[in-house]
Amino acid sequence: MKKEFIGRTAKSLSLALAIFSGCIFGSVLPAWSQEIVAGELERCFLAMPESVLPIVTMEERNDLCRRAGHLSGFTHSASLESSLGGTVTFLLNRNFIRIQTSTVGEVFMRILPFSDSSSVICVVTTVLHPVADSRIDFYTTEWKPLKADRFWQQPRIEDFFLPHTDRQSYAYQAIYASLTPSYMQMSLSEESDTLSIRQTVTETLAEEEKPLAAIFLSPEPLVYRWQSGRFVRQVR
Image (cartoon, rainbow, N blue to C red):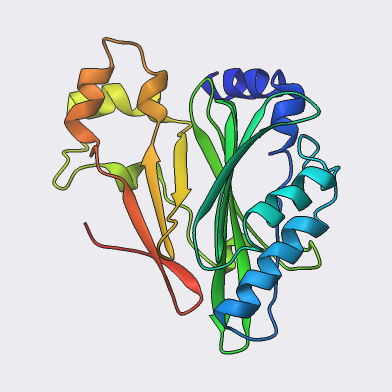
């Protein structure tokens, strides 16, 4: 029931959420260097079809890149009023982009090394309302999707449980059914090849259920680091 509620609400976001209806960027780079990464990031951003990112026109994207100094080594942020309506905020550096539309949703993109001579683009897409929920995708520069399970293992709600949780207890059994389907908010780090994930399913619970869930669920996010071409979960 909760998943259906989220789905119906997300559909009602119409144009703003069109930004997130498909994942955005992709790349396989000819060499791993910061200069090439910067140029490839800009190329992907400018080559993106307007049908994928309708709220930001090609002219607006070109203007952003000019003001960003062609994505040189410094972090650059800018906001603009889209010609199609709404405020769009950008944060860019050499191999990272964040795009946010008011309070509706956000997209993170980061170039990640895959081998000595190639890399991939990781895109995290998040709908922020009524409760934050994300997905992660990987792409090539030809806009071809790559299988996500090649690059990471999706966490389960059980991964957020505190150590030594008594899963046979009455309290656990009483709350567990309310924790599925699970919602998770993901974010890519601006400074490093790190992915953080926090569970948001507790935000959908009734007020009387939240203290019970807090007995079992850790408030700390799961952290994944990019190692040897995969996101690897770090031990708490």
